[in-house]
Length: 386
Image (tube, rainbow, N blue to C red; front, side, top):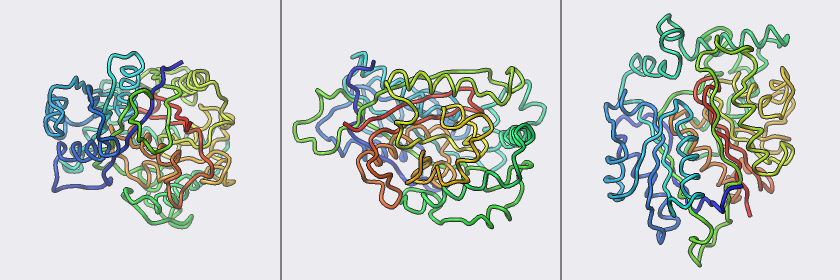
């Protein structure tokens, strides 16, 4: 069991293409927003989740840069890189630090500035989440990889064309209520069907757009909460990170996302709950096929049945297992290494009852799962409203 770790403050900037501002300014804005919720707490550690800073922004040593820019000079400030799971891995490290009493107040930041490069540079940088020698060098891209997985899934389970449309429709419907989303307009099934194909059968509506963003949370122990703390207390009930083979061809079954399954099972065991007790699931929908596989790996659907939850209304805010409740990466935008922290911010909003038109009724338990690559690295957290 975790010691009494709580998320005391949250902050975020709008996800989008912020050509005119820098990585450091994004980071500082998110941190200041989170700290403004609990100004009396003085952080003694900053953990940063980022994938592309050194590649695209040509900036390493983010701990020193961001700490100085956010007026946190002198704090312990490591940077965590775990591909698309960098934000979730940073949250994991922050939770461990507070739970073990190595730190009392930790800022966890996820930040990404992908528009510091043009499209071809972005595409090249994103292939780093794959096995360079055996996948990227021969020409495979993340979208091409998702296309191969979707083809295999559809053939293996006899899934009809267009079966994944419900994931994009749900994400955009929810994103319409998120003031920090990149896309705030619902889409129709017809819009999905007419979308340009990216990597057959994956189309544009199956792909979450890479974008800039920064989000932050303040972690502490309950004993450190100020006496006048008036918001609902959100506790971290489970935290873990699991890895699998980096390349899909090294796995015994490319449809069995073992790290996601193990991470989910360990989180449920640590929190002392079952999947049926989860009120919302902020999963990693970089591609719609991965949303279906994630629902299956986490125990919300049987193998080959995850896509059906997007057909019968199960994933909407008032459904059986609401997902991507504020748009997910598809509508919010996909700030790569910051996704895991955005998930935490959005889950806290749900648990506080502040999610607006996408509010899940009486939400008390939220599950977050952040992937690096096709479940090569998986960070899972469970949050509970006290």
